[in-house]
Image 1 (tube, helix red, strand yellow):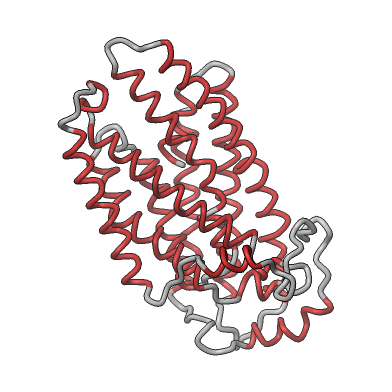
Image 2 (spheres, one colour):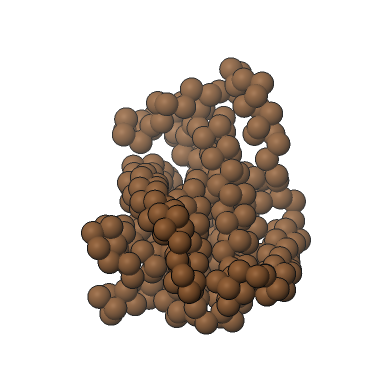
Length: 342
């Protein structure tokens, strides 16, 4: 089991090297209309995405969007400079980590005082997950780009989205400036397979800054909804294992949150993540590849690479799901692996 657990992050890392190499040849398609974008605009009306790929529950359009929906979407942050946004987010994460660690070190709670940096990491992670989840849910599900009237491969896969660029920049900065350094410095988090996974996430975030598509809001935002109960359970479990005397109430909360974390992970990552990847994202990538030309602003190799990487990620989510199932059936170590990696 341990060997399998170590092999998957390696395979995931290798799958990300392909589009990473291709990304060196890419320029931002939003700066100038590409042949690929032009060809898709002319050929796409004849393209009929299978019903399983459509989003019939989304009834928004540019004309009939409600005032509240418009206000929510317009209030989302946008990015004008990737480097600045990444530096700010990484600095905020790192400074928050240091300040919280200093404060928690003076706590009267033994479980908190014993490992303040670990608790500080969970607090920063929880706030981050709530932030990106909100942006992802509002930006992805309320976006007019998902309207059945105007939703095309171009709007979903190739249209420059300033909110997606913001989210990808934040994730890139937070992983490089805060998450990876703290993971290396905190013994309880220092696991090489977890580090590889987080490096992969930083690479994917870099892709998102190059092609800030609508799907960035889903993969970096909506998916992280399942991380919120995982982080809470992780901290409750840490409190139980480090306390000299565990109260029945704390143990009850920990076991209850374990069930919530398992259910949310199953719904969001095992099922919906797989559905969006196989029935939405990959069909869009396949259609874009079929209409690709030599003058395209996006490399064909890059499109193939992100398709392969999405399959690698889906495989990893399903593997984590199997660990969750085993944890619910009786083992605690499996869910710890998911908490550390997700």
